[in-house]
Image 1: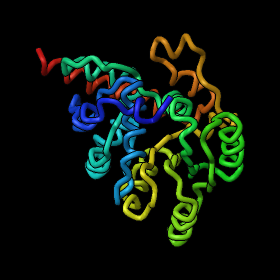
Image 2 (image 1 turned 180 degrees about the vertical axis):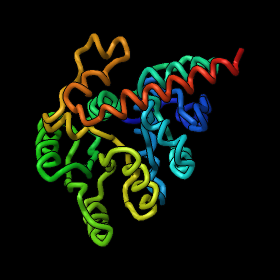
Image 3 (image 1 turned 90 degrees about the vertical axis):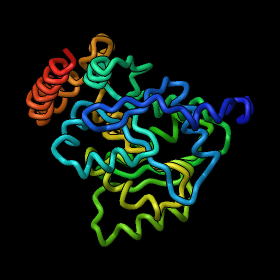
Image 4 (image 1 turned 30 degrees about the horizontal axis):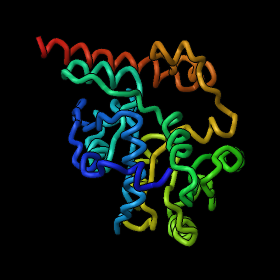
Length: 262
């Protein structure tokens, strides 16, 4: 399939202003297909400053509520995609039905598969040294039609940042996947996007752990009922505060929002 045929109706993609504001964070209500087409559009129309794409879920929105600077960073992105049941419930209270659940763990592999064969290159940044090594091996063997030009762990000092960016720029990737967790990855991309010579940088959270095999996807039935977090909690019990306390806080905020709509 020719790239031009995939990127039809480009004007529609660029002008798509179907955005819902959830607790101050502006989220793009894209279908999976349109999200993929939009990312391909950003690659094709490379700008002087690297474009940024973020994913937000209940935890991310909680962080943004307590840190308005972080909220501003999220809103500075070229696209913010909604991940999870909490986002869908909140959007519904605003009268919006989210077109798709844009989970980065699914969207990024789908994006790679749908855009394979165009000579695109990518770089992986983040995670512990052993995790990023295994994730790079996985990606190299699973995403034919893309070229992985390099990777680097996320445990580098502020003083080493320029060297890491120089490494990325020397390899000229089309996409930089940054997996440093929230809010670190978004803050890092926002701070350095003007220095990164790549069309697009995407904050991917724990994606590298899945690719490395240190974290498994939750069973399908949990994903279908919007409780994927329960499978993650079983494997990473140290995150209990995020899910039990954080989810409770988010539900309370939803209840207040629902009351205000009455």
